[in-house]
Amino acid sequence: MNTQRDNSSMVRRSLLGLLPIAAALGACRPDTHSVTLPGPRAAGDGSPVRGGVEPADTHQAGVDRPAQPQTHAVVSVYDLPSEAGPAQVAARLGEAVLELTGKPGEALGVEAAGLTVTVGLGPRPVGSAGQGLSGGLELPAFAREERTDRTWGGDLLVQVCANDPVAVALADKRLAEILTAGGASGRWSQAGFRPPGGGPVRNLLGFPDGIENPRTRPELDREVWLDGPGPFADGTIAVVRRLRVDVTGFLDQSVVRQEEAIGRRKADGAPLSGGEALGRLDLSAKTPRGRYLVPAMAHARRANPNATGSGRMLRRGYSYRNGPDDQGLLFVSFQRRLRTFIATQRRLDDGDDLMRFVTATASAAFFVPPAFTPERPLGRGLLGERS
Image (tube, rainbow, N blue to C red; front, side):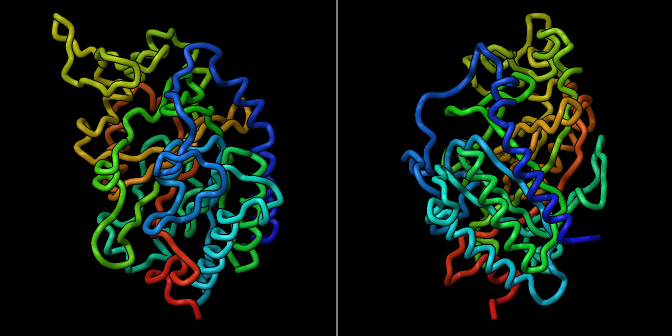
């Protein structure tokens, strides 16, 4: 394998993938019935995001901050060098992240409203320390997967998000160059986009997405962030999957059939069980004849935490479109236990009217360490101390 060529190609794909996003977004976003909540995109404290978003005292940015996910993203997965260098590579990456998010205008030459960089470590670099994570970081095989050596697993996750696609591309390129210089090699990279606005936004199927997310600080503490002493405290577990969706096949169905497959109304996202737009499902609601209002195989029912018996995921996914035959969802979720995702996906595999249109083409799980500083390098306690 030519590592330099692979990484150059990876950076080029990120740049090319971001350039047509604005046009694609205009083409794919429905013209009517848009579903957004009022208010500006905000940081965790509710204030509008103007510059970059640095790691906080405890958590990395790009998980629950900004509260509304930015409109553009690139997710990139790398392998770290096998020699005694992962700690140094991670420390240098952390320094670059602090530089980019602290003063993005100076570092990139362009302003970058809401720029975040979120870094995760895979099973191999975490190593035996990963036994401290409930369920570890290894994902089992699921249905409808197209597995390749380059798109399954990985040592390092780098998620770059901002409200400007140029800023995302430049930041991703800068970080790829730093990682390549340190001996890391690129596996895969995917650019994604989502409509602007507050609250859940529409995906390429035209339905609002992200309604069932944790919303309050107690919910986030219970479902997303790890506690306890040691290097895992204040971190979380990320699952990233590129899901190719047969958008044409799904949309060729009647709107009624689409709604039955999703479990929500297309016009406003309201659950078929009744209630207001963006409300949560009532899984017990039935017709007078005893039929469930949300069909048994509807995606919203099958993935609902009350049905899976697992926790709730914080999903910050993005649509992607590489071409008419390769488009869908760049799925990103954060949870405190990998079992939350595994239990949900297995239930979907058992039966789900949406999943027959979906094929996973890339997948991995990572531990997202707590916030880092120049004095407390990224990966400290997991990758060793910086020499």
